[in-house]
Length: 165
Image 1 (cartoon, rainbow, N blue to C red):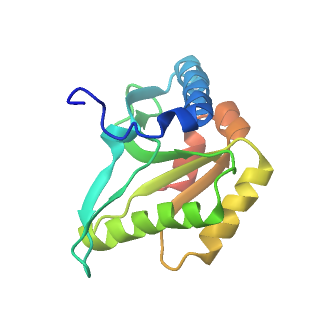
Image 2: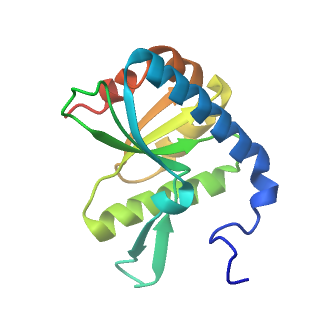
């Protein structure tokens, strides 16, 4: 038990999600390299988690993206960008999406930091479901929602187009 990785409970039930995320990242990494863009760091969900203490209840909480990416559009580019990545196929229940994005809002309130969040959806149906949840959420998150095919085709410049300096 002492060697068990944090956050792995229930991982086998999400293996299809993990495989989808890793397949997407494999393709993204290859295309980033082909375009001359630089992916400096890819952090796992465990490494990317943001812990906070709720401002009202003082209970601990966490916002847990699927990954964190640190990148630049070229090796000479002085603008290094960090985004938290949510990869989702639209199969999660809306209540679970709501809780996930509410945790980002709670983190922002507790920390005073706005997190840039990149949501990648493999299909328009998944993107629509995600948009519906985000429209219902009270608060402001810095989010860009992109289709997987668009991001792979156009590259990380597409992300920066939505997150200007």
